[in-house]
Image (cartoon, rainbow, N blue to C red):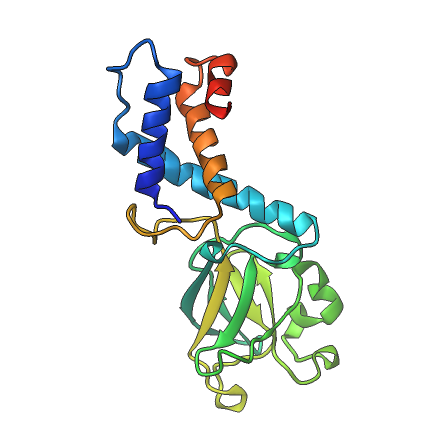
Length: 215
């Protein structure tokens, strides 16, 4: 395993040794490299998750799965409750960027996801009723930056739920410091290094020179 700082140091060495051999005193500021590493990690992992879902695979990098606690809000007149998403998850088919939602006091009993394209079929938009297809359970669906539940789970009749645990698939490493271990594979690390070197060399380093690193 590695860290963002170690990746940045490796990029520095590769650049100095292979890519800028004619100007060995030309050292890239490590602070700039770390910024590029952060950006590249987000990009590479987002692409990796999206590609795995296209291939029908649902094993996601654990570093992309981040847990939040969100307060529930009752929506007057619609017999339903909602939460505001703390961050926007990765856009995936069937709204699977929202990995799971459960009451904070019942984390092992998640609510049932209803893909946003099926909301009208389930009949939840108009009146928020618990349709028979859910067999008595509570479902949720996404509308914009909110997640709505098919029942008003804030009422005593539906559990008096004041907050829920939300697991989101996101591409954001801001919660991991530059010196903490990154739970990423060697393949992702290599892809990030290549991507950062490409960014640094954009308009300055030829593809022939870039290929030297890979030999």
